[in-house]
Image (cartoon, rainbow, N blue to C red):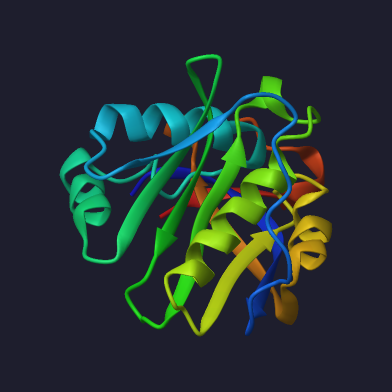
Length: 192
C-alpha cells in the first residue's frame, strides 16, 4: 500500500480510418526526427519525464526499469525523437501490436518548445509515417490533464472522437508530481 492522490480526468479516445491528404507541414526551423530502435531506459525516462511532467504523465514513472525496458522492446513498439539544434525536444511512441491498426501511445514536446510551432508538424509526421507503412487505422487518446491544444490538434490532423470517459487515477505521491487543483478528485487521497 502506498499513499496516492486521486485525480479525476476525462479521457477522449480518437480514431482515424484514412490518411490525410497532402504532405505533412514543415517544421518552423531545421529539425530531424530520428527513430531510436532500442532506447535505453534512462533516455526514455528523460523524454517521458520531461515531456510529461506538466501533463501528469505518471504510469511509466511508476513502473520498474525492467518492466519499462520490456515494454519498449515489445514487438510493434517504436520511438521517434524530434531533434532541434542537436537537442532532443520531443517524441512520439507508436504501438502496432494490433496491426494494421497503430496507436499513438505517447506524443509531446519538452516544455520550452511548446508554442514554437513544432507540435503540429511533429504530429503530422507521426500520422504520415503510420499511413506510409500501410496501416488501415490509427488511434490515440488524450485527457484533460494534457495540453489544451492536444484535442484540437488531433481533430485538425484528421482524428475523430469515438468516445469520452471519466476516469479516476491513483497517482502515487512518491512520484512528486504537481497535481493541478482542477484535476484533484474532491481533495481525496488514499492508498493503493
